[in-house]
Picture (cartoon, rainbow, N blue to C red):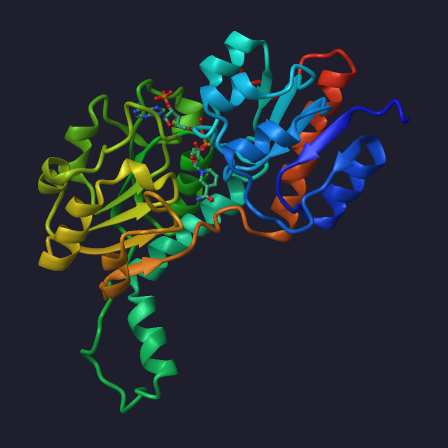
Length: 321
Ligand code: NAP
């Protein structure tokens, strides 16, 4: 018997992360990469000291209460943690951590990809090329829109929102934002604050959703709010799908009220609303915000740093419960 803590890793992680987990823990890896359901999590927690999970595993109050008493901590390989019932974790004395910062740049880069994909009609052009429909040059065909000089409204000006703003400034955009709290001038870098998100919507050309999914933000972008947006505005979502009401966004993309959308996340993903797939003006990605080699390694190392601190008797840096 080794004296290393037993660590259940719920999904397949990058090689370098699994190697470190194996070195420092009695790690139980998930080589099949099958998603673990509630009953699996409870069953496999027996004899386990900590769990390194992903956003695909749901730690509801029921699961948390059902975990073996030996489980001290759950570290999620994500910054978003709506899949962990933090109130239930606190009640049970279960420490939970996430991985902020290390995925900020990759997710902001992806948001810019969504913005350029949507504004430059990348889906339509790419499909024409692949279908052999690249015909004679035309001065008027499938024209996109410039981002220079446009107003970008960021809903959720946190780590990722600010990194999106930094990049957008480089494109010559004017930055607007809404948070519950106004930022200090050094973090605003000239961005225009709107204490009420509804006041921001009519003033912007492109809306980027960068908030967490919480009871207050779920369903934020609904029919009423889309009606407040400018005609031909564009919506980007690299936060969580549940922040958008799909019926409202799809209707606005179909009617032409909105010019386009760039979406990385979807409600009930991967079972996204199939109508998105029929929309010419939707530039779609399958939740790849943090999907780079460097970032996925850093996320794993950050989760392990948190667990190392817990087992050394220290406070983990990224405690969420
Ligand atoms: P963060 O630093 O905590 O920023 C979140 C921002 O949202 C904060 O500025 C916060 O400001 C604001 N906010 C929170 N609740 C709000 C509300 N009710 N109304 C308005 N604003 C609100 O988080 P982050 O690291 O930037 O990550 C943001 C989210 O991105 C994550 O929670 C995750 O869901 C998502 N994400 C997605 C991917 C992907 O692959 N697509 C990758 C990473 C992260 P106030 O507290 O002042 O309101």
